[in-house]
Length: 391
Image (cartoon, rainbow, N blue to C red; front, side, top):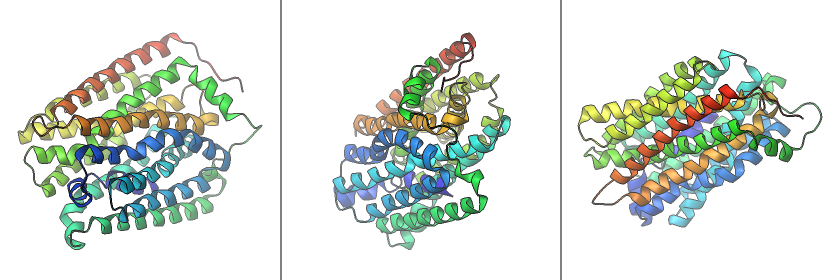
């Protein structure tokens, strides 16, 4: 439920971009900045969020996260210019990383073996479901119902987030210790843990790959409705078509991470990267069949790349369950650098004459860098002996 709220609010600005731009007198570059504003804060808050999770446990930390995510949506209701909207979106960056890292920590604490990938795939359907609801209902149902008031839609999503936080805390309290995930044993300096992890080559490669993955994912996802409209689709149809990758992603999330066992993981990473590359090519074309193929490939790639990467990170010998919170925080902190650069860069590269052509060229290049990272990571882990942190 918390991750559904995450998905709802993270993507809620995309289908409303045109209305908000007109109402607040914004430029496309300013809207791109607003779309990437929460990722900018996310970069700096993800590691402290991981430390918080390891200290107080997921029950309390995730409840706090749900409230903060809801407050971000609520603050957007009262935005009256580009600056106030950007500040409201930034607030999401304080609660979002706790949800991301907390979900990973709960799974690592509760599951072992191949079931970890399956469990991660299940919770990763949360933001996908939220995205589908946001993209498909905004123009088709909610705007007509609320008399074209985009502020009322943000108010609705805020209520969903607050309700999710309440249900999480209630259910986690009933579950007891299995949901708290608090750090046990002697206290270890989290600064020292971060310092040790950042010296491991495999960790650094995963973190760099996460930047590329999220730059591709957030850059394309945030501008997808506008991209589809530039190909001639109506706002309602663009919303439906933009939800297709997420629908495919839900199915892929339940299948691909479970298959990504250590012996197959790097082949799967390369395959997903090639799917992203193909999507960036197909989405340049205006034929419905080409657009459909590009959207399907985008859904397959976006839904599983992050899940397989974070699974790879958390199963490294130097990480494991004990440092899952801080390692997840490092992952999402690095990845959201790409989350910021993606929508902002594509917004800047947009021009009335070229449309999103330059942005898609950038995404093509990024997808090829992910392929190179997967090959390098496979080589590195194949050559390096198992290591553990001396803590």
